Amino acid sequence: MTFQTLNDVDLTNRTVLLRADLNVPVNEAKLVTDTTRIDRLKPSIDHLLKQKAKIVIISHFGRPKGQVNPEYSLSFLPKTLEKQWKVPVKFVTECIGDDAITEIENTPEGTVILLENLRFHAGEEGNDADFAEELSALGDIYVNDAFSTAHRAHASTAAITRYLPAVAGLLMASELSALTNALEAPKKPVVAIVGGAKISTKLSVLNNLIQKVDKLVLGGGMANTFLYAMGHPVGKSLCEKDMADEVKAIQKKAIAANCEIVLPIDRVAIREFTANAPSEIIGLDHIADDQECVDIGPETIKQIEALLEETKTVLWNGPMGVFEMNPFDNGTNKVAQAVARLTKKGQILSVAGGGDTVSALDNAGVIDDFSYISTAGGAFLEWIEGKTLPGVAALQEASKKAA
Image (spheres, rainbow, N blue to C red):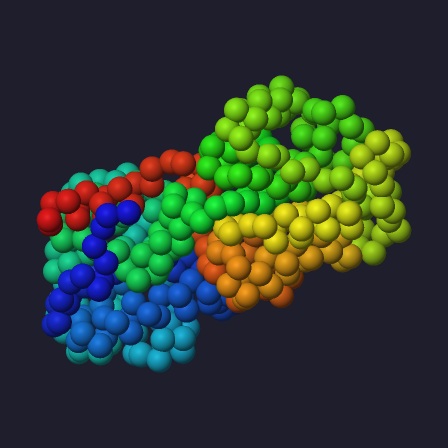
């Protein structure tokens, strides 16, 4: 990873255009229900304020599809930002143009400026050069601190770097460092734990990971699909039977890459899909036609825990079972707690993210005990698929020009 960060430039008295991801979850009253993305921006905000930089934040919210839509206005955010960042925040009703420039110029030092939703302009998602140039008129330097949008080639993540010096924010830098340490330059052995419903949505992930890791531990519906392809019955469990040939191809590639695929050796099965439904532990070949698997069993948990004791790096994406229903979160919880314990001992580096992963680890009570948990969904998945992220590539290209 070769790009400059906030720590590499002097920003004293400069106007910084900070790309943040404030596409946060809200309830019907437009109250923020999870401030994680806001809280993780605070180190960059504090750093910039310490340097007496003027901070102008640009972000998107929802999908207004290039049209002004009050439902997607960012005007509800300043109170929450002020509470979490302990700094005054001024909202500006436009994100380009003379009025926005005037508002920025007239805002006193020490006040963060939040501009209106970028996606009110079609040029944002179109990665339009003219729109990017208009954005660039708002500041002296561009800082991208929104890894979660880095997989999008949008004007505020890609094209803008043609018009302003560009560096990574502290959050972006920490995210990329964690992912690089987990996948590109990890301490071995490396274990990837991948769960979730379908392998069809994660084919690229699996095909990339088997080239990078020593062991691939599978859970959830995708494990059922692998077991089915190997001839084991799955009852009425979630299973993509039409993906059997893809499974066999992945297994063949894994053998060639010297990557061991670890599958459940026992499972928790139920007949009624409800919380606390009667359940039984079954072996791989003992499931009734009217049963479905909802979690990994105790022997599988022991197998994974033993494997983790010999591991140096763990990359986690997706739950081991139906973690949303008690007690079928047990497998996910136990494995997550084992990873957390070994992380706290300094034995392994653990990085997690994507999809339901954050919710599953929060449910397991280990959200603060992994080395790094990414709040990025699509960007995290595309990274572990091995794709080039436009927002990251733009920062790298900007750094080359500055060198």
